[in-house]
Image (cartoon, rainbow, N blue to C red; front, side, top):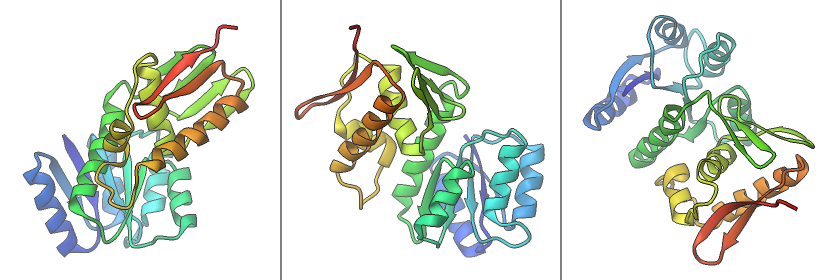
Length: 225
């Protein structure tokens, strides 16, 4: 699997590249946004790690130009910024995930696995369950009552459920695939995101419900009434 890593701190870049290569990734390292755009224009990658504060062209601008050019390669934003507004800007600009420095290398690897896994499974597919449709390329959730663009983790959770609508998925499985080794995340974050999704399913008029089996996990059920 091939990654592009755009980070202007060369010592950090060398350390992260060594870790990625040790974990069987092929990595191209660049140190400014202009070079990142040049590489993206001529090479194909399975994932991109973008630092926000880079010389010449910042990470947000690189991401915006990627998406405007139709490049759907999954992107992890990497930055020292922790403000909510910055995270929202990155995600709204088309980022798949956002990781704040300093970070644990296990978490970085888990997030890379999560974002590339989603991309690898028919990234342009459209999933349908009942009267509900999920566009895996745009993250658009639609039903007879309207449409929502899902955030990254909402999309990943609903995508897991819709690919196996009758299968019970444990809370631990959601944590492992979506949050990985993120130390600050607790199991109840899964319930929080289920709550978000239930509200959006209701808002689009879906006849699909997220059902819980106490102590076991969640699954989808279609209401045929």
